[in-house]
Amino acid sequence: MNNDIFIEDQNVTTEMLKNKLFCTFTTEEDLEDLIRSINGEYTVLYKKIFVLSSPDSNELMCTYNIDQSDSQPRIMKNTILVHRKKETNTLYTINSLNALIMSLNNGVLDSKYAINWQDYKNSILLVQDSKFKKLNTEIKRIVNL
View 1 (cartoon, rainbow, N blue to C red):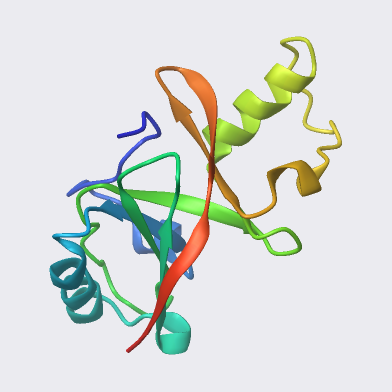
View 2 (tube, rainbow, N blue to C red):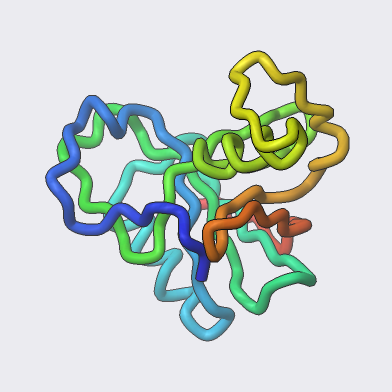
């Protein structure tokens, strides 16, 4: 499991959750139950859940956008808020983006630092054990709800 901040049963305002991309970590054994839970809990935009796998991890990652009109959704266990660089299909957290910039820029956090996103194509960027971590990803399955 990574060290990025997990949101679980906190008082998170609806404003913070409008049209957000979530990534929920799960196992192969729990995947079908998780898909049912996501479908029952949220209005999923585009009616798609992307199930990702990584040769670097035994966990699966389910990514999905929630509808901004959902009022006060419950945030599931093992879920993080992620952002996506569409051109390279890179998922990242703000913490991991900061850690990446610092690792590339001699420990200096510079919001104008230009990242070569091609180096992180088809991956998810995380913070694990307080360090930057890149997991290569591939689509295992697309679930149409």
